[in-house]
Length: 247
Image (cartoon, rainbow, N blue to C red):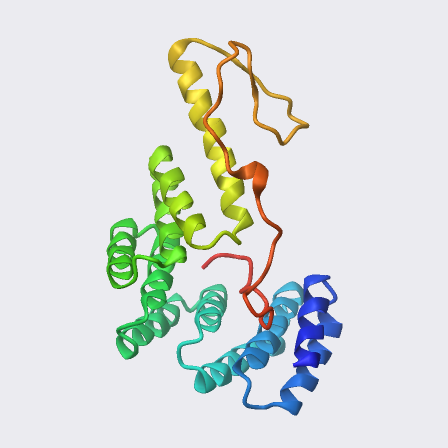
């Protein structure tokens, strides 16, 4: 666990080659730990993508599958492997991976969330909504499902509903700094829409991250952005985030 934790720290610092070495050592020390397998695969994935190294990507895929053998419901590993399959021109296998997971684990709401995200990336909005409805029916406290519903609403222009969905997600899991940022940005857009409707202009300092100053003296909608918590990767800090590119 010490080696794995050190690897996570190195990965967060962008020292991927050193992180890879630590995860290799951690895997040798404990070959039954799925998080270590996932971390190792994810590091190979990042390095292989950056270097366009097919061998590294093949290693990543193989080790992702090993992690899933050890932990069949590993959420981050399912997502990362689906990302890899799509990135390497095999989206059909990505869909199959997630569908089989949902069928094999009918009580895991996260499987539906990942299917929704994948369908959304291919502009299949209606199917994505159906999977999110299923996920929230199974687990109304799934913060990730509420966040994805907010992203759907934002993409469709339903900004107020998107803010509400993001806030619901944050109420369930406050450690989501990206959602605080999204809420802040959407509040600015909503304020601008209100000012455009009323004929009042907004002065925005492009070098400032604060809410815009209203020339009319009106108060903008409240934003959660100012109190965003520090970034964290997981409750146990034993895994690194899935690859940043979406599906």
